[in-house]
Length: 234
Image 1 (tube, rainbow, N blue to C red):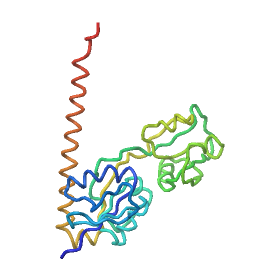
Image 2: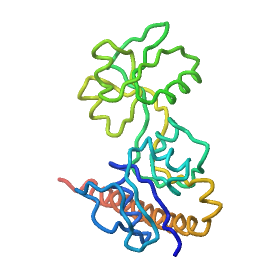
Image 3: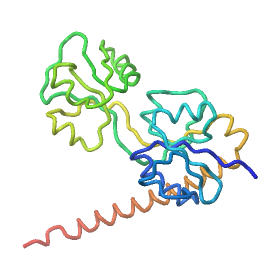
Image 4: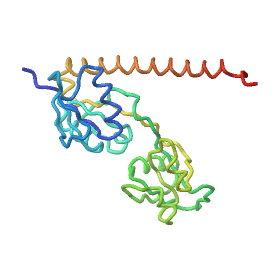
């Protein structure tokens, strides 16, 4: 019997949004993941093995062949890179942005800026492209307090709704990168297990396309409803 494909999954929001797509492609875990302490799950169909891990570890597992396929955010790929895999697909889920942010109305010094972030490599590349000299301060979380405590002039972080920024007196400035979840494939796996990998990718593409069409129609229906109701109030 052929060994199942090993799929490394980024836990958290990406996992929650990806599992329905995977199920629609015919692959479901052998027991519910929610509330389970297990990290490795067989699939009901036997075609795949699902492994849950931190997003930063997904490219490593795929690069070294411990996983055939990985699901993680574009932010992870931009930050950690990797030469042992191909980026094959944009799933269009877990969308957000990497942005710079600062206290509302802040004035910045003429010289070097101090940037607090966990996206060290992304920030370095971005400000180098801008021709701006910066000192990068690595933090692992709670970026928003760094400018408030005088640790940094700016932060570079993931922004979704912007509510956390506003709650801490910050405002978003520059958009550095648009982020969504991506499918990466180990180079050797793509060569040696091409048919299996492509079958799964084709199924996912069909699911994503159908979902995008449904979202588009729902958006059009919503707009139509708003327009038809315009001017009806006395």
